[in-house]
Length: 332
Length: 183
Image 1 (cartoon, rainbow over the protein chains, first blue to last red):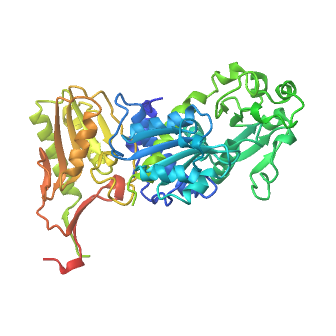
Image 2 (cartoon, rainbow over the protein chains, first blue to last red):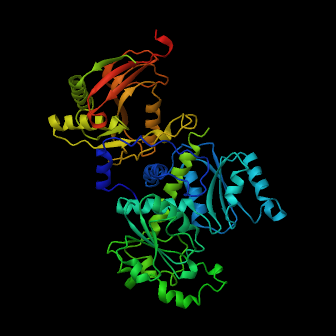
Image 3 (cartoon, rainbow over the protein chains, first blue to last red):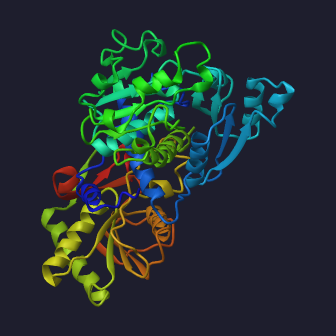
């Protein structure tokens, strides 16, 4: 995980001039990637390079955001996103307060807006929110003066996951431009897929969506997204792929009869070694987690040589550090 | 914006050659030396001094790159976020003699930040400072061990170091701001 191999060091040391050309991040909130410019995404990814170096140090901490406070409001379960934000904030020396729906005044009927206002009054600088309703972070962003980061809202968006996936692809392949990314599975319910499609297409990737037709929402292909195509057959979709991204089959959201059975889904859409061999030999396997091993992905692929799933977790911290720095560092 | 050249290409080369000799002399050789260039222009300067030492001592001194932006004391009051680039430590700095290299020494605040950053990587035996230009106006008790040129300046003047690696040519200029009519 350290970026200390000789090649990288050489690249950094011989680099002629840093790209000071990009401006600052001109936004207070991070709600989705749909309104990000390519330059803004590049700024985040380049800043994340510097943050990743910090995570490789023995003392994984810099003093930059001393005295700043990040509050996480998670109304839906999460391991990696919440802990990742917490670690990112702490690595920048910010303080972190974690709030969950259970045990807070939400149980007494306090509204979302009132809770957010209370948190603001307590001195928060950034609120990270995950909510089961799409749009909830947008709502509170309209009612508070602090920065709001969307940590996943319903089936709508998960911008920090999109950014960390871009970062991981760029780290291994050198670029996102022209890369063929196959997203497999429950795209209908996936906020990860949506944010990824915005980010990937903006950075010049070609996206193939592969899923049973009942699990693909309308409107994600052309004309709105000219570089996104549908291919319901997994073997055909994987041909020439640089990146393969199976999504978690959201079992809790399969009660509406969209799939005949999980067994049939496995038969047609599970990523196993045989199917992965249809992609390019060095193709990367990404997964936003948590995984249903044995459903959308087999254990040997999930933990195989082409899997960068654990690296995604580390990169998630670096990308979130970059976002916190760019939002809170130099704020006001 | 009147601009006055104070160092040309040869001047810069001579100054760096002299600094290279002074560093080896003061440290009785190159044992345990590590050069850390401060981004942006400290890095090519550090590499040039190391190349000079390689020429006359035939020793490879490790060179690293340090970005101090995350350690600045004004990072939350600037109103913008300075771009951050990765720091590269070429070796474990525990017990080493660090030569910190920067282009211009001014208030001393960048050097304070750089020392904080370095200490996060370990406990060096010593930290010494080499700069191409010392323009005065210190705000902290910091001084340079090796100076290319001392340049008395007014507070409304700017010193601009241009290097081939970053700017296409080697020169140092003083730029007097037109605002306020000067002194």
